[in-house]
Length: 120
Image (tube, rainbow, N blue to C red; front, side, top):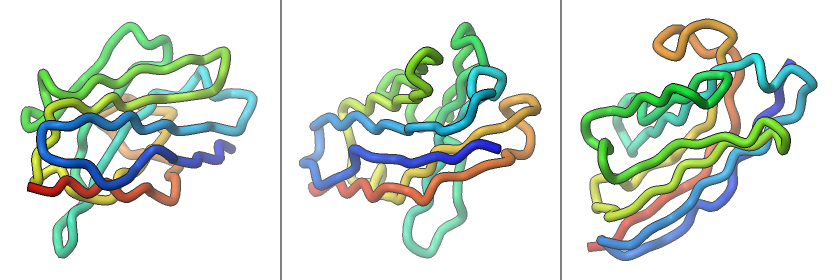
């Protein structure tokens, strides 16, 4: 069982940066691949980025590649999403998720989400 709590969302101007954090509770955190997803109003939830259990491999949606960076600290049970050069289209609720499978498979645990709003 893994409990996830996101933080770090807020309002930022286009071109700005935000760093999202995801705190995980659970002794087996380091065995899970972790992902970030987002859901804009009236739209489906979409994949943003993922990181392997060791942190050695990362994956990104084309829309954020080169602007966002996912990282993790297994010693602190934390996952981060550094978001730079933000655009209004990045506005969404961002969710942290954990999976015991591959990063592109189904995710087992989800956080409650944190709102990111990018103004033009």
